[in-house]
Amino acid sequence: MIKVILLGFGNVNSSLFNALCRSKEVSIIQVFNRNYIKVISPYESIPFIDDISKITDADVYIIGIPDDAISSFSESLSFKNKLVVHTSGGAAMNVLSSKNRRGVFYPLQTFSKQREVDFINIPICIEAENSKDLELLQSLGKLISKNVVEISSEKRAKLHLAAVFVNNFVNHLYEIGSDILKDENLPFELLKPLIAETASKIESLSPEEAQTGPAKRNDKKTIEKHLHLLANSTHKKLYELFTEQLNQKYGKKL
Image (tube, rainbow, N blue to C red; front, side, top):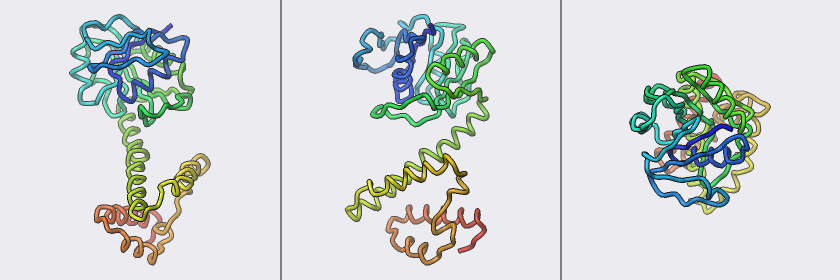
């Protein structure tokens, strides 16, 4: 049985909480959060605390808080020589206080409290200072996912960067598409089959092979029409930037 304490209860740790609670080989000893949390059935037996001095003993302490707070928070922990990990994609392992054994337990996925996800295919990126702790994190990861991989802080930073492009920026483009449709009283649902097929394509094709559209084929008339239709100057700049990038990629000039 692996004893775990979650430190912070944001999007990542709340999702980890749900996944770990389902494993018979994990015992969540406590959940610490500075703000009050109403415990939802069937997890009333798990102590939710807001007093940092009451944090007890565990095999792994998982910090799930904003990146810029990880260092000072880990330093404020009263215990020493325990395995303390964070869940950040962008923060290096060594931002954690050296008074404890340091590690990373980064699930590469987008999390929202309003939506529960299945961890089985989510990559769990792990890192630790020694082989014993790495083995423990690997064992913990395999209890919820079939995709556990050791990645250094340097490579994980690049992985997180790539994730921002394919998730956060793409989601912002969804917002732009939604805004354009709202102006015409059209539902965003009209785009959902296209979004689903675009995502599905990369299961069998590379992003380069899957690329289509007016910019790739250098359809100047359509491009000019789209630019004319874009009233928002920021959206127009984005359209021009993406079009220029695709033109350079596929060797066609406007």
